[in-house]
Length: 131
Image 1: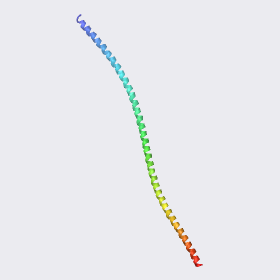
Image 2: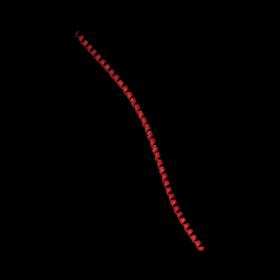
Image 3: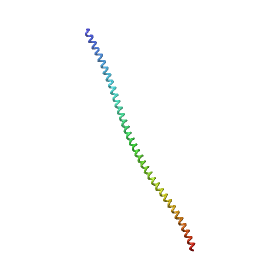
């Protein structure tokens, strides 16, 4: 019987080890299920983040397009302003030339009026002398 006791003890020890192993398997399954649930949740979160990133990239592209459109519009307005300034400068130069011509013509007109007045006076005096 003395031999059976160690065998019974060994069998009992093996049963304890099997039970302990079974608990470890159960615990491993629970941990695996928790990891699997966490993995699914992480994948859902990653999908959500990718979708948000894509939306932000799309908004960024749209914003960049709008900025480029605005810059093009500003450049066009700047070119128009420069063109208008050049035209204004040309018009001002012409106006100054015309003003100078008008001033010169008025001076000539005054000189002609003075000459006409002088000639009329001389003609009147010449008629008086002749008569």
